Length: 435
Image (cartoon, rainbow, N blue to C red; front, top):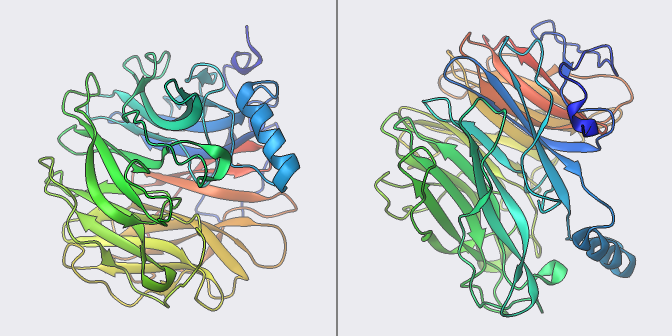
């Protein structure tokens, strides 16, 4: 039995984490003590079950890990990654979780907090997972990054053999892509529409030129609960910030909305939202969400997250041009055609980042991490139906531990499930979301 399977239920008695807000329940640790865990995601199923997904450091002797170490020794940092992926499921409202299940094969996950894997439930209870993976392009003999998919049809007890959903090409940009990858299909997202369609989208370099600073968005869609996927197709031709993770959300008609960051003249990197028709067509015009113009000669590694209800589109993104730099909320009331003036989530923070959004009965909830007067901590705040703040900033964590990278999912009981990384462990709890 592997160390990851020794704990059927993980107790709060291990590394207890104080929670300041009275609206939040006591937290539960879902990763195991032997793991160096990071970058969680969370999903809530049709029967109220809760699935947690996270990355854990892999074998330091693997080929990808050795390549990362060599790059780190040469440049001081690395764009290589050799990780594993785990899922644990709760069937009692988050009080206890199953033993973590190893999802991928080997240490093949290319994972960072800025390109985290995604998990989502379908309406029938199927558990869907998408992640970027290390591969070799056989013809070129060079490393590439591909997007993989797997699913569980037995409540997260087992997962199917992972499948590649992005197309391997003969493109070779190893001379210009950080890490020496010949091509990249990563920084992706996944979501399940109300009609059960599974959308996986990622940033793709197959059309990138050596002197280009932008990528394309490609997507693969399944209409049969993940059994098969149509061949991936281009959804946004160019102008996409190549390392700012995508996000996706759907309206009640199963039309997808894409959150992404654009790159336009003079390296202006704007957060944008675009809509597609839900029938396989490309995304339409990418509408900037506003805020101070952020000109940056380099990739900010910052997502644009969103949530959709009717014609209201809530968005959140870090903007390094604001004073102080931080997460800004912008809301559209016309389906993403225009946006209200963005507002900072935490004006008193030195810096705020890594936003997550979830719908509530009264509007939405946003969570993020920020530095105020100590280590990085997780905070949250309620929004009303119009996207206006409906309550104060609440601190989820306190103390000397570093807390970061929150993820949110709406629960059936009206609360919001939040997951986060605290030092090298993954925690979760429920927040009463009413403003």
